[in-house]
Image 1 (cartoon, rainbow, N blue to C red):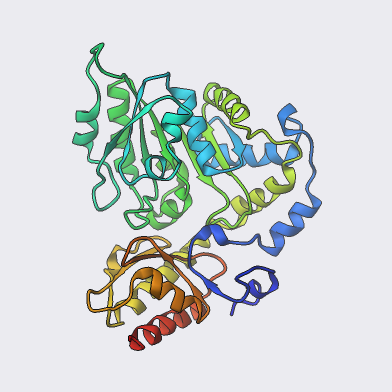
Image 2 (tube, rainbow, N blue to C red):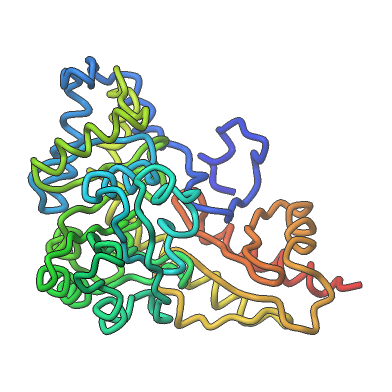
Length: 360
């Protein structure tokens, strides 16, 4: 058991928690930084720690400016609000977070409608499908205003999207006068997996957001990056969404540590994901394709012969100290992160194997 994990009081203290990288606790270094953070009123622009985090983020993503917000969803909504007018249309992936998991905010808050496109297995949106979805000038149609991609693409297996693909989407957006936003919640996972900089992956986009509260291990927040004019609009959107914060340097301090020290080590999570995938592949009753595991996410299914649903097996695993997330009647997602060690991965594989051998 990871010694650090056992120091945290939680309902799941002592569990091997593979439900998500959002379950990460701040590291001891982050906790010290939070306790010692210099703070001010961020709405007035007076919080030096927030300002430092935003400056670091903008530089690392190759953008002019950034704004710190409480969540990834708020970052995506604020970006969309900054670009669209009432009745506009946004091209998104049909399995994207912005389309599936933000409670219809595009329509409810931004007053825009989505044009969903089915992703390729590698998480990309087919370029020809994007172009075909762009509306011609016709008073009967909404105006296509924005195209969005997700990198890494979660539901497609945590797939990293290449710089070449992102460049192609950017060129297509510019050709048609569209704005281009990247939901880069795990953009640093993509950068590490592809051995490129996050700035290279972000370069063609008008805006990009990333989460510091997932694999980077900070407790709260996301950062939205773009040019200065865009960030001015995004700050207004943050205000109306209720996301303006005051002495937020206390939480931003963990983000500063995250950007300084937690990115290169993401490869450890990717290696652990591959380790888990290979271990699961050796268990009768589990269907998985290990080469598809490229970052920190492992998707797999139960074979038809297994007499359990994913939910039922998840309960059995919980009773043995392993938490994993069912994402369908017979499908799971496991996510590796800082607080899961190689030894814990091996233990999780053992628990899966034992639980499936005990089939009723």
